[in-house]
Length: 204
Figure 1 (cartoon, one colour):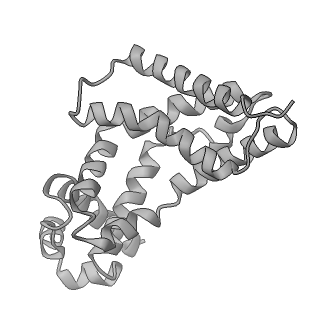
Figure 2 (figure 1 turned 180 degrees about the vertical axis):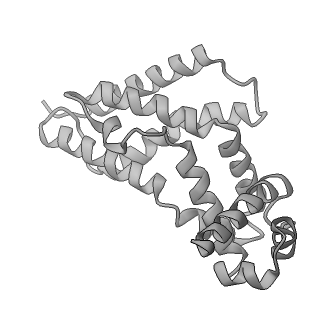
Figure 3 (figure 1 turned 90 degrees about the vertical axis):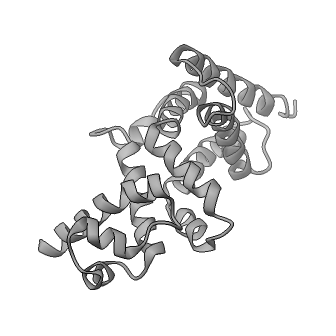
């Protein structure tokens, strides 16, 4: 119990440091000082700074998920379009939350200088799991002859990109942030465009 409490304390202290100071400027020494413990104690829970950053990323992703709602709920439904519409709303809310935007800024600013940072982010399985689940839905529709796809996983990844990239750029200051109503319309239009493109390739 004590070991788990120490781990949680370290992550709680490290999170704002990484998000405000950046990956390069945040040291294990600073985390230890903020947590009021020795560097040795921090290193006893995390092998290095990259592993600690990975734990911070995992925690942030977990907190972006709606509480008390199983992940399977968002993939339930009789037809593909309402499922994707529901997922689009969820994904946009998560991607545009202040912690997610702060994390994105850190990654974009420092991933080139610190390859271990990108590796830590890539190890977080939430995005890969979303792509896998969406790809499975698309594959089922393709097998039923309702979509024309040769690579469902590629299509799922492209769906996430077309959904998030524009609103995220604007939220990061490259344009005017979108209102809630604009985001709802964006999500609907992104799903419609994606599905119409996939349906347009079905061989009759």
